[in-house]
Image (cartoon, rainbow, N blue to C red; front, side):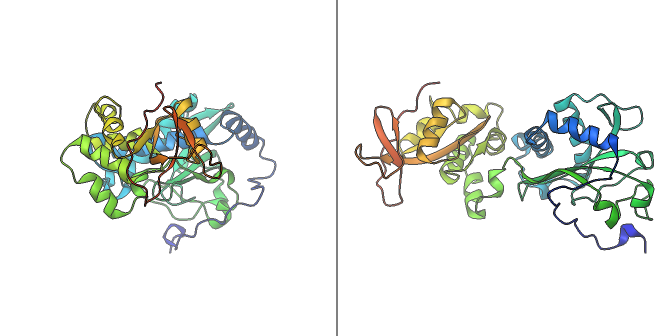
Length: 321
């Protein structure tokens, strides 16, 4: 039985320092350059998120789950990851491999299974940047490794690509491991809520239902586009007839990425909306002399998060931005 046919075991979580290959100066140089470009991994995470959104193309298809993709689309994911990372970091192309990073050629590999990267013949003994991401788990990892001959399995597929052996997986120098991926909120709502979101015939009604059901959770623009399935999907969120106007009657506000909105979210103890994100929540009037409850001063009065038993009160107008 070939190594590629053996039952696959994920590598163990890295220790405080995953050494890679001792004395590999090229690897250390590339590690240093990548971490200087992206100290917290947010740029890689954004590129991975864009890749999921591009393939799902929810605005035109209504798809939001990996399982809804065609097999050929899933196969194309790795190529799109490679392209989106190159766009994000402006890596020069290599002569043989995908990138040239800090003067060293590096191949970009993606796998749906952690560390199950397929190494082509031209990348043997070269540096590889391996990535993995799970939209359902909202996690991703990235590591560097040198694909030395003795660290690769004996078997291969029809393209002579091979995976890292168990020993090879233990040499991966993890840059980021199980880091948070920007969330696809539709994957974290109860199935009944998702069905309710997509049930209405009109995009406007679906967007309103989304913000009713996903209160307190970050909702990205791509999710709004998936639910609205219209070219002018942002119009379904804004005031002047959008969800912000309509849901005020139900006591619900929709906070955006703006500084004044983030200050309100912080005061109420909510997650602050990031770039291109929204957070909806139902509010109730707060006593001005009660300091024990988190509250925010909005539209000339104090407001707090509504409880289930609170009667519905028309929500305040959010600050203009």
